[in-house]
Image (cartoon, rainbow, N blue to C red; front, side):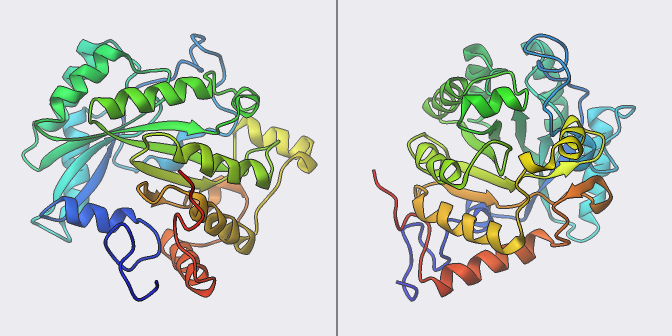
Length: 315
């Protein structure tokens, strides 16, 4: 099978996002991050206080994201940052920090429209929580997606309610299922974000997660290893009781990802395997690997094991 195309139409052993992205767009496309000043319902007391135990949003916010700057300025500076290399590149405005649907619909329309005003912005990627979308909001995004590319990225993090409670997510897995189903039935692109290695979970839990996610109308999937960041509640918990945490080695996590892929629905597009936070922000694990280096390790193990995404998938 290694010499033939797989179900997703090419020879890579998993349904990778970069190939899908190149095929979907007729030109080179890059995401530019936007910080529109949102908060989260588990920070302001609506669903909880303090935020997720692992969360420090500084880790994934580029330097050009500055709350003193308008969406227009952030988009322009982000485009200038990337366009130095490819002048003909087009862009997606990536509303990334915190919960980017957590505002009245009229405010959301204004912010999204502001980003789309730039002639090189051809769509939106909106990062949010499954408990922070409504039917009315999704109806609006469905209409918008007929004109431009729209992706709604949901932070699910785990399929286990006990874990969601432990990490102070403030929502249930049932709400995640609802959000994915409502998005999919409106033909809006969606992405599920999940963390492997959360405290209290086991290897069996993570493999069962692959089976559970495979039952849902997930279009894209982002995985990443549990990381303990500085200045988070999880850092305090880790220092107090390190025995409660399992810190992956690169080799162990690589094997887990390959096992996970074997169980995963082959129709799901895999966008990412790891998180790449600045090293000075990370307590553990400190791998010192770039994203592409880890991808190469996964591809190598898939080939060595003569396996592929969905090999063990059961409908």
